[in-house]
Length: 212
Image (tube, rainbow, N blue to C red; front, side):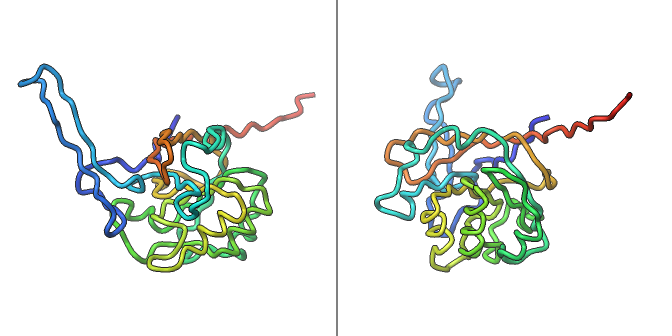
């Protein structure tokens, strides 16, 4: 069964302070014009989204230049709901399996539709540790990999290691383990980020028995 891990885009949804809020309205209606035609206005960082390197590097790749295969495939999800900061020590204790994608479920899972400035961020050392284990895509249910109001040191660590970031996932229905993942960004030419529709499906664990 596929699980939708996307924050719904809706009016009054929480966004990063001073970002353009999400609004949807009808420019034409079926009753008056024969068809409903909607308009949206939003920051590309609203809701579940991918940060392109261009977001934190003037010379980084834009969202349309990222390889699509990065956003389709296996992902390992870890539960960090008891952590206040993602450190190397925490990741070592997780005994991470081989994967190119890692999603981290934080305390944000307990209140997914609010913006709490005290969300769980990542140390830059943790990002470098993950890169040495082959992680190319890091996802979090928090609104950023960096602490609120802090310098973008975790973002820069991702830039240094070639790791791509997904933020504002909805992981409350996910437990630790391997999943199939699909979450494609829009091909926004020159864009610094893009909303995605992200879904996962728990991988089946098969036990082989000897019946001889």
